[in-house]
Image 1 (cartoon, helix red, strand yellow):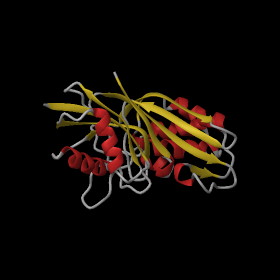
Image 2 (tube, helix red, strand yellow):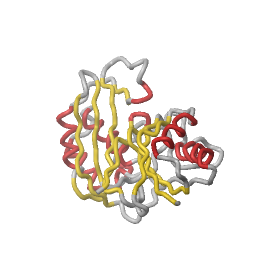
Image 3 (cartoon, one colour):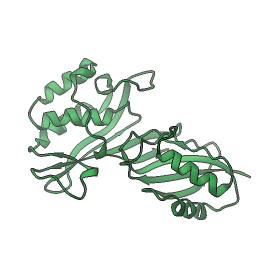
Length: 247
């Protein structure tokens, strides 16, 4: 009997060409599909909640797939985790309603972007945070976060090549806060995101934190609807898909 399985997936995206399957390139989707097809002895196609780019990580990516099998979800989870030798871990596997769709049923996604803000770089976690050696003005940066919270046209923060009919999106919350004396986290939750939108947000917000632009100028960049006005795209390695929310 055909069943619909839901996966919650954690992965280190450092050595992958993103989520979406590509010919002759190692991707998260491709590795999971290979493992599932081998375990279930049938061609499996998984659907993710959305794409993450090359080098981006995830704590809680969500995917689903349909399969004709009697294998229990917990056994399937163990099988995938034992078979995949790359830094991909299935955190949860469950059977859901047949009409559940990881992408279309998602109501919001939350991303976290990590910054190391001190003079010295780090030796151990450099692949998971953006090193900025000059002090950042957190208060000014949070004013920018307030400016992008709501429904706006975010064309200034979209890279080209994004498949979309509109650049208007709704951001439910965004903030910058200290994790400890030297580490910061940018948190943002929205109904949907444009290509590189989070990385373009944080790069431009950092310009405010470095006092290169003011929060008022940041708002003018938002209103300009012009990508050339915003900062360069921040490095991928600081970005994590934290979780995907469903109703």
